[in-house]
Image (cartoon, rainbow, N blue to C red; front, side, top):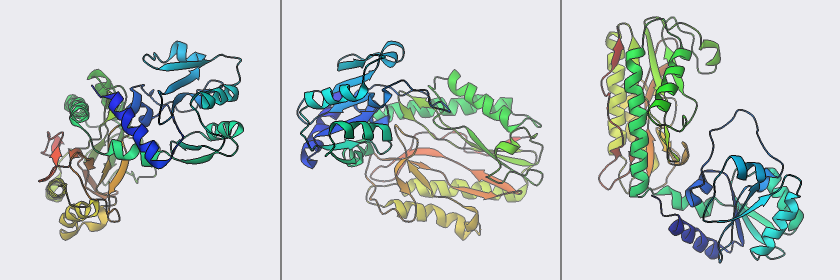
Length: 380
């Protein structure tokens, strides 16, 4: 169980050190991290209530947080205990409530207010009506350092998210058959994720299907959803579970039909590149060094142009978090950081192969949180 009081105390100390008068966190990974108040599975369009821009936690350096939200959220969506909760009635003025909250938290006439990087513009505009002289800054320097290193409780949760994800892959494999569609694959994986305990997919479940008879070309994913997957075709999985607020990201490749010698070689290269990248995730290395180590395995074999993307990204309560395993990121790796390690070789209209696991940085090299299905899976 995360120690939310310790997290709050660390945030308030950081606020005091930075001269921040008020931190406002809307429903987000940061709010979830700090209070345990969960996010919802995303909707395609906005489903919002009047005054929802003030839903979240208002935090001052020297007093208990105050939470605010519209009545509909308070009545039907969230059960909040242990906090001072102010509920906005259906006909009330949200700006007036925001002014009351600023006063209650001792915000001065020209405060420094930290907001999430992805806070609503409506939130900033509403706060400006109450404190026209306010200075707004990013909350990232306060929140990001705390979320960067995962403690033992967080890693236990992420291991469980990985176990759910790998179980979903295991139980999807017997359902694979020639002639099924990408939509069939997505439906099966998403069902298995829910069946094994995932709150939601951590991102849109994706497949990269490449073969001589398959027109997948990255930009045309929707157009190929209903096309039968007829051999020979390589199918690269990319999906992950959400468990207790933490995300997983996972990839394996499956071949429909006879892979042939080149595909077997490509698969071995991708797995070797991942092994090299995992070993390079040791304290004191940099993100760029880890990327270069894995990339060299593929480049030295002549497939460098087919490794199109970074080696990986940070992961935790968001499926993509900084820093990134890329050539330009010089962040020094520290034990407890978590990254995906996901090398690939993609040649559209020919073949595609990828692998992905979440890996914890350790002093002597990375520790993968999943490790099954290392051999190429073939549907004959």
